[in-house]
Amino acid sequence: MASDGVITHRNVDVNGVRLHVAEAGPAGAPVVLLLHGFPELWYTWRHQMPALAAAGYRAVAPDMRGYGDSDAPSGGPDQYTALHVVGDLVALVDSLGQKQVFVVAHDWGALIAWSLCLFRPDRVKALVALSVAFNPRNPAVKPVDAFRALYGDDYYVCRFQEPGAVEAEFRRLGTELVLRKFFAYRTPGPLFILKSGWGSPDEEVPLPSWITEEDIKYYTTEFDKSGFIGGLNYYRALNKTWDLTSPWTGAEIKVPTKFIVGDLDLTYNTADAQNFINKGGFKKFVPLLDDVVITKDVAHFINEEKPKEISAHIISFINKFN
Image 1 (cartoon, one colour):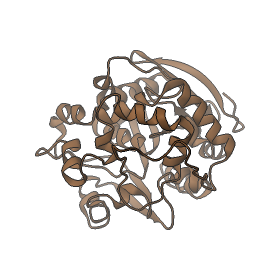
Image 2 (cartoon, helix red, strand yellow; image 1 turned 90 degrees about the vertical axis):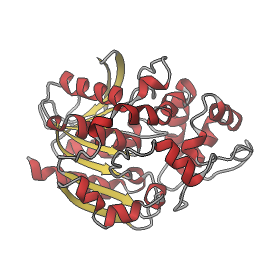
Image 3 (cartoon, one colour; image 1 turned 30 degrees about the vertical axis):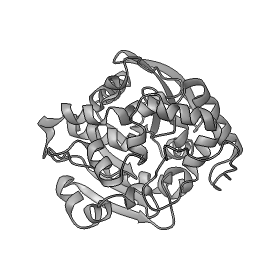
Image 4 (tube, helix red, strand yellow; image 1 turned 180 degrees about the vertical axis):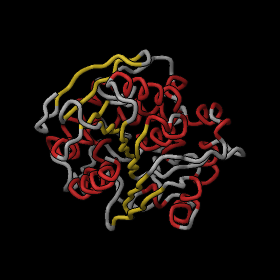
């Protein structure tokens, strides 16, 4: 592992799976665990890793279970509950010889990070969550059922539920076009993938300014190898995770936290998210919430769209705990 910001790669066996892990920064430095979302990879942190290394931290970014060059358990969605994925992360932290780490997480990575903080707060010094706020378990309704009641069957989370259906649609469109459509999404509202089709394979979707042709080529090559099923299984395990986490109903997150979201992010413009985040509900369940930053004219992939700003936010926050 290089100490000069150069990113190195290795495989680590944890919790019955082999994770591909990217690292940067000096050995022995405080560890920052970076957790990506859908449809991404360790590569989403390519800007933050050298910045963290330069600030004296050891950045560790795995391809999460089911993604990229990490193993994809074949047992179906039941192998992708929050308990399974948090188990991977606890074992990864153990393998690094760490009792506690900082965690920075985006999208599905943030959902998993909230679960890590809920199940094992003793392993997390502080959390920077991007895009996805803590969503307390509602004992009255399963999450996918709630989304379906609110938005209908074409809401992307609901469309992802039927095994094979959206995979076939993604194959029809082609991996690169699917990725371009996700990365270019800037509508401040819910995402729908119609059963009648998510557009034409001949559609041209310009890349956002923050992602290069080289970047999209890397993502495309990796998802061509692995397919999307690993990432989709996280969505398909949502209700199973709900079933398994009833003991944590009403529990609070007892970890110092900073939350950052773009005002154009679909997650910030879904259901009652803005009221929950800004009017006290979020703070009630995350009492150690230190700061909420709403960035203007920024969409979902915030750490890639505004890399310098997000790196600065991360470093200034975690520096408080050293």
